[in-house]
Amino acid sequence: MNEMPAGFIGEWGKPLKRTNQFVVERLGQWAALQMDSLKAYVDLGLSQFKVALKVTDPHSLHEFADSQFAVLSFVGHRMLDDSRMLAEWNADGYRQTDRLARQNLLGLLFK
Image 1 (cartoon, rainbow, N blue to C red):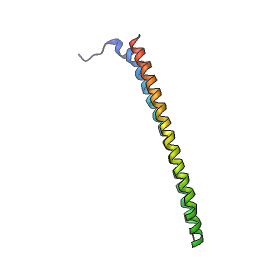
Image 2: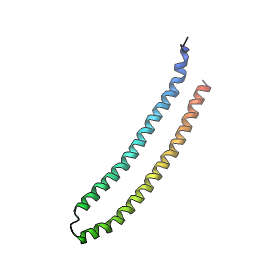
Image 3: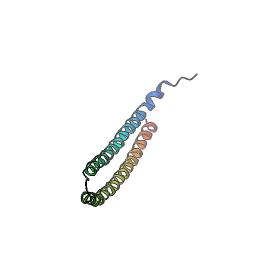
Image 4: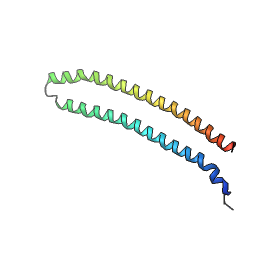
């Protein structure tokens, strides 16, 4: 009673496989983007921690505080670059999803 027709799996198999491959590829790209950003922020945090440990007197504290403006500028630019990269990744994903959906539908409709 719950059996599928014999051709059903073959008919939907290729589009499902392409869609699954696309999703896995996109998740891999997203993870790579996130890991790259995380690594940059962690490296910055560790370097700042090392610099902060070298503060021993008021003069070195003043130099450390002055250097924080450069760090804040770097973080601000990095956040803008990350958001731009993510927006481009999303736009590319939309284009690829649209192309894949059209390809799958045309393949199913015109067999």
